[in-house]
Length: 271
Image 1 (cartoon, rainbow, N blue to C red):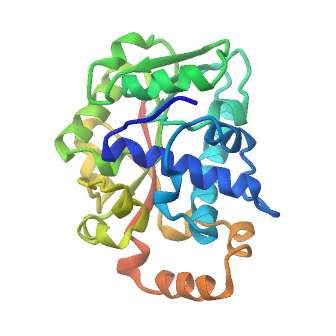
Image 2: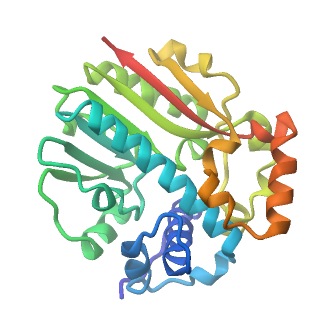
């Protein structure tokens, strides 16, 4: 069992992994990520410190399913593409979706995270793992010859704003065309990060809040859609929440400031 000693920000990827593992063990799973449940059993780490209950596990799994569906749709529309998964952590998305050989898949994360992935996940054809910070010059290792999807789940809010802007600028300059999917916090959400129990217990720090997609126009990204909090909890996941949590979540959705604290952002770039 590999031991894990990640930084506070890095350790949040283990919280996500653990939430998906709990969901996979549930009677009615949302994502059903059996790989996550297996991988958790092979990592020497105190997952209990995250104190993730059924409510949090449903939310984590539902967000993963939303991203899976978006990536799956892009691959359906652009079968000969590159998919770059930034800040992949221990996510098994490439195994869940199992894209065909026409898809070049690239996973990027810190070297120690990628080292752990190599120990726990099998090698996969047409898949490349790059050990680097997303703010480093990893992009030169990826051919810039195809339409490209860049997906970043649970990443942007941990970046410094200038680093995040520069990251997407390099994406636009390197690849001929494509799309970008990521989740983001509003600036108010960054200020209220103490409300996020998983982030607080991991002792991580959120830094970059985005209120208006036009803030990324300067790097060459054109907004396609922005969906607020309700996008992360589809109806089938909503039904699995305890009654009290459903009432609380409904109340959140009625307050614009709270509803907009978390959002799913979709951009396109290039021809």
